Length: 215
Image 1 (cartoon, helix red, strand yellow):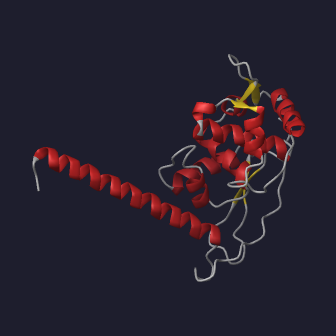
Image 2: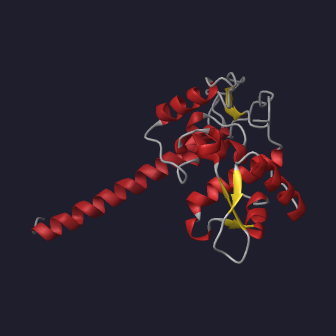
Image 3: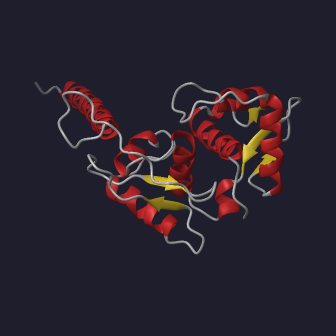
């Protein structure tokens, strides 16, 4: 498969993301796809692609069997075919999509940012899929060495060709030396998720206790 243009990668990533996050409106119309590409949040870099540019990217992806037009609607809609075209499991496709949408990330960041697409049991499982993608005859991801001031290496996708190692990110003020802002954000998001699950478990135990007449 030839390398993708940055906009082709963005279109493919948006289709994978929206299939998981807004299934009721998937496949996507051209308007929805353009909006997803130009989204201001969860996108690195933020772009302003036109409908004509997105249509050209769709045509390129269709020629690679990565995207096709959905049927059964008056409005033309588009859906991805990434798992079959790339011969990858859904978990690996989810990681590639997040890398295409948000740029290089650590395994911890990828686990958090891909949670709505695929829930990984732990960081080790994320790293396992990344290592498999990196070990393919034509590698699909690359792991960059730890930059000065960072504790974890970052991963980048190779669907658009070779990429230079990303520059080191400054640590957030007050977060401690050597800890990247992205890693801090990932840890805080994980803490929030665990707290939410704990509250749900407490509520469940309370309901069970009430039903049994305990307490």
